[in-house]
Length: 360
Image 1 (spheres, rainbow, N blue to C red):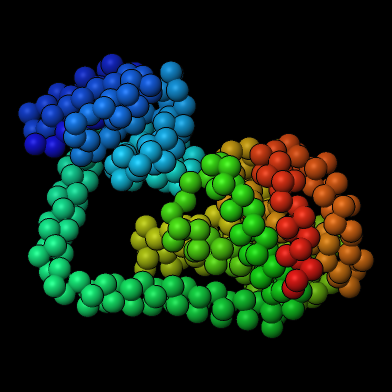
Image 2: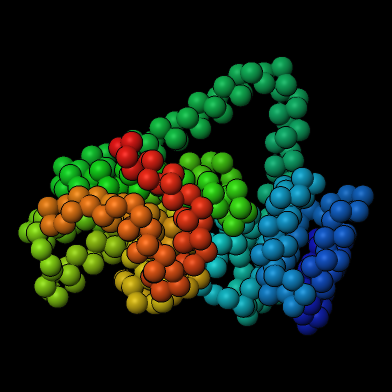
């Protein structure tokens, strides 16, 4: 029998879920984050699935989720999360931290139970596949090669798409094309430091696709008229409105074809970076006037990388700023234009930004 661990201090929800689940599964309930951690450390057998309330009073649910995915014994434990917060940025954060599903309140217990059933059936099928793989151990080399080739084909396809788009962007506007490739390198430096500091949790394959996707953050400029994109000098209000649309052009293109790759991380990450890299921490950015943590974290990161590279680059309408001057401007924008945490991480690695820029 499957065991389900419910971690929530909302007794009404717990009772409703228990009533739906008790006849089919073994249920364990913990109402505090620490007691859940103690249980997971000591349980003879881990639960098949965990349901975690991210709005716990005793501990930040995201902290508990991070611990679960970093603790060797529990890192593979599937975690469904519940939250009062209904915004794309927070949902993305939960998935980045390792959640397998995200459910906002209010919800119908019977509907949530249906999701639980689906996840447990997927776990059963995965177990069956693992057993089948064991039986096929004699052919493991062949299977491994097949899987490796399949994964390499996916990676090659992603690189193919990014290569085509950056080539087209460069042909449209050489500055934007080179700028996009450099931003991808800066994004890699910033992301690695955030991973080292445990501000982010990402699977290795997600790290690679984020670097690829970050090179497409400005691809919407393909849709901006040449007379605006190549203008030397300050934009008029009308021209600036046209230029701002590049965030929407890219986002709409991705959204229009996202049905071909449902639940694909490359699509989701690239969408957020394209649409939201000009949002500001204080809510004065565009296109959606998002503020604070409502801005997807990857967009906050690529937005800072974008500004740094633009500041230290030469353009027909401006001379390049020094690295030190660029750092001063970014620090001045801490808490207004930029996420304070992202600025603090940038200041830890700013000399690596300088080196990366000088190498291109």
